[in-house]
Image (cartoon, rainbow, N blue to C red; front, side):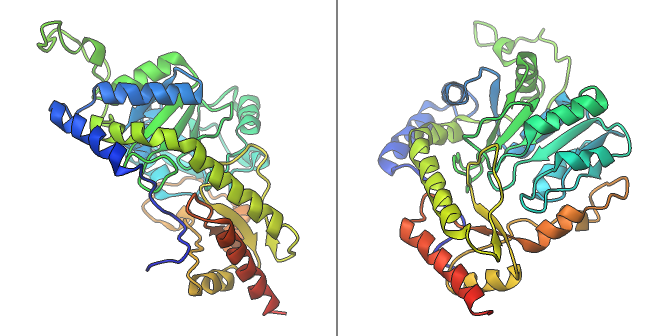
Length: 370
């Protein structure tokens, strides 16, 4: 399907910049993790305002490492939401842990701190999801977890929220996959609250090997180097990092365009009784613009028929039999959100005229129902 206004589009820098960068990497004969990755990581550290950051091959692997850092393993119980991509829960299942579903706010689709109090026992960690670039109530959740459990490892799946800042999570995991705001083709990175977690996580992303001491000054492998904790093959490489280094200079403009479109949607839709614009008190990257609305399926089809790629984006995961779940939690917020939410195109490729066209189409749909 070729959409007049797509929900997602891959951002790429000019080939005049990207081509020489990739040529330099391939000509070097060194495609694995090296100087290009180190440069990309340093730029991300500067941008995020922290040294506790390392890159990975995907956000899913970053979540896996975060869970390991949090002590999750076979028999563990993890709190998370079913309103997300399956990539959020796949690492939990692969580690042999089980899930207790948390309810979501019916307007935002994200975990509601008030419902955490219904959890039936002490879990081992929590994975909180930022929906569509909107940042979850991380500070409030941190306070609830501290009050209820004397602290609980808090992992934030910030896959779609590049450029946002919020305090409270022990681990923030970002995606650099193809259609994200900042893309390296595929990849991810993690920001940790503690420096030693970043150091340990970096080692675990490459089998648990201490890369700084892996080779001797001669270039020979240090055969005496111990590996006290085995990790995974999840590190970034110089090819994807070279793409990232070319992309970063464009991110201020890209994120500003997403934000401008979101502000326009908010202004133009907020007076409609059939549409609710969710609150975003902790900010948003506005990867998409989420609304809740009457007759969601009808509006979705109406917009798609006009070439506007409106979408539910994710289905609720509690319908999948392969996810290990414990408990029988009622999820009224999820029921409401999953039946009413719709994501509208909000990206850098969407013009002011496109936003107005989408809004006009939304208003025309409801006017036709009167």
